[in-house]
Image 1: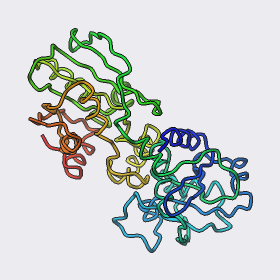
Image 2 (image 1 turned 135 degrees about the vertical axis):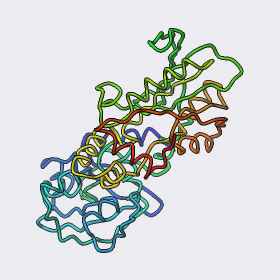
Image 3 (image 1 turned 180 degrees about the horizontal axis):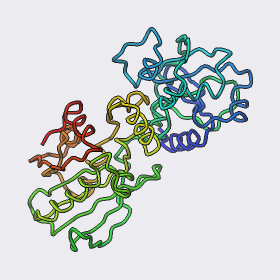
Amino acid sequence: MNPKSAARAIDALRRGWPVAVQADDGACHVMAIEGADDVTLGTFDPEGKAALLVSSSRAETLKLTNQRAAADPEMPVLIERSPWINRDIATSIADPVRDLGTPLKGPFRAGKINAPHAAKSALHLARLAGILPAFFIDGSGPVEASVNVEDITAYDDAARLAIATRARLPVSASEDAEIVAFRSPEEPREHIALIVGKRDSSPPVVRLHSECLTGDVLGSLKCDCGPQLHEALHQISDAPWGILLYLRQEGRGIGLVNKLRAYALQDQGFDTVDANTRLGFAIDARDFSVAARMLNLLGVSEVRLLTNNPAKVAGLEAAGVKVKERLPLAIEANPHNERYLVTKRDRTGHQL
């Protein structure tokens, strides 16, 4: 296992470079559709015959007849390359935000995938890279990086996370706070813990907060992230002690750019759940084993968890952290996020 290979492959995909993905059933050579230009695509696919690889949830929206409405977004679907599918058409196939502008797509024909395990891993790699899970596949040109399934698994392993540094950090909610930064060797994003108050023998009040640039920094009214962050800090400061874990998992794990694509789909009438699946992602792609690893490094094995999301409770307990109590976090709705909050309640099981 070599997680560095996965890091190189992720970097290559984000730059629009082709990558080879290997599994037990063979290999596939892929180039991200959103990163391709005429020059790089011409090098990767000089004959213009490379097929397209998309997620099954995206294939279902394109009305491929062999797809079910409840398609698993993790599964790959190959679209055979027709002469009329150029780079621009491929981009509109990959990105559902363009559906209203280019409504008449097809007809498409699903083809056989020669290495389905490798293709599924390629889609997973795209999600780790924060790009659309849609590729040109099996071009005849050279690749810039090569990765196998074991490399990707090792890259995903939260056990590689370690404490990088820590420092005193007075904040508005509490002058008695310490910030701790966590880093893994291959992952460029650092996770943060803010420890508030004096540690004692009681379980800390803990909040898992996933990064939200639009809500935390810009004050977006489309979500409740910013108000939740600040309310959580105040509730933690009212406890004997507590920890805010700031997780770099923007957009429920799909990344900033894809979250903004989901926003655009919401403006077209889709809710949060449907927007994510139309993009080819899971409803919630976050990895709460990262939070469990952070708590483990801080010497915390039992918490009082500040959350409305039962999945966070289950995720921590599955990773070996005992949740002694779930504490609700109530935030008042506004006209811009009311539907979003209803979706969280009705479709993803959030509760007060």
